[in-house]
Image 1 (cartoon, rainbow, N blue to C red):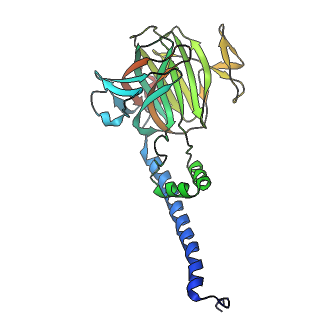
Image 2 (cartoon, one colour):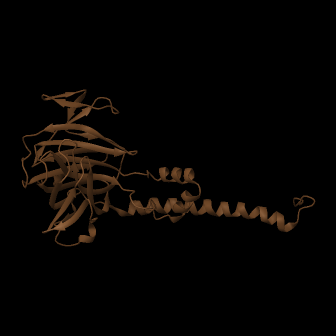
Image 3 (cartoon, helix red, strand yellow):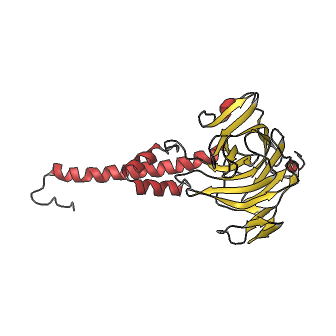
Length: 303
């Protein structure tokens, strides 16, 4: 038996009530479809291979469209066949990323600071989830429209996809005065995961080359400088901070392996950072980027 139309209500008015419900149903269907599509596209974009396979290489004398380049107070440019990154202000970082996403990786690069203070930072950015720009970098355009209409709903959907409103990444840095550290950016904050530690393996001074390597397999990461594995000072409390003083890891434990499952995949890049004590004007150059699939054969590759 058909439902009766309430007395005093025309059929056209009743149909008018059904229209918003139909539109909402279509919107939810489109959003669901785009969520699935976006997840599939992300998986398709991951570069992977058999253990030891060369996945990506860059000598910066060609295929420049593979890297993010820009000009201004922070600069990313190709100069004399190398990638040059520069920061002018203190406590500032800038980077350039390859236009590919990786899950597991073994990245190696030759790097040198050529100008500015030796109290600096430069190295490898990994598992970068980059949301700079207009914030609508997903292939699902419906999500952007939904976020414009209902910000909370849009933000919830982005969180479902693993997106935040800021860049999330890890960064392994060395300095020209002989230190190294590990950083993590998440939820609009950047924190030191391993304190700056002095290393005899770092060749000090400006215009001096160092080889930097990071291996990421699943949620485990290892690090090397000029072919030598290095240990991190990791806090015993995952949400805490450790310090390295007089050869001791205070409030933490020394380990060659950093374990964190916050980011399962992302872009790889190169980064330069200025410090509060050193100041701005840091310029560094990078060359000979090699990315292997981690495994037995990649372990035989020496920097």
